[in-house]
Length: 114
Image (cartoon, rainbow, N blue to C red; front, side, top):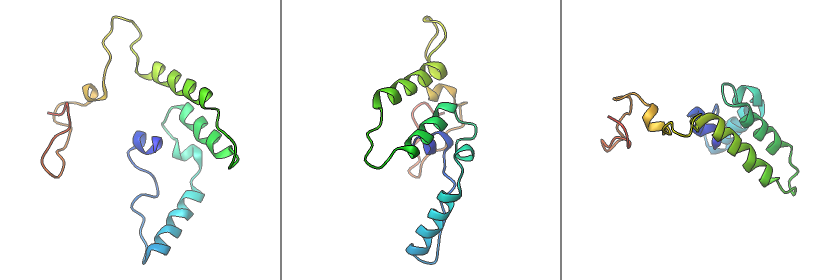
């Protein structure tokens, strides 16, 4: 889900089939063929490390949540927190140029959109 939110899509989204069984089989094939380096291309390295760590866990192995929280906290601080304490925090809607947000099906624009 994190990768989907950061990239906006996943390689297996929109894949179809003649029936549900074929559709899910096609999705499985794409997931099995997708290399982590390609899936995480242009994303922070810590996302790749997280995915690799999660895939290496045994089914009944408990994740090191403390470590994972720390890594995501460091990523957030490096990417999104201003370098000086007096600099304003930039929310993602501040980064979108005016008019770049498309209305949804009901005609509503996202918060912060033009």
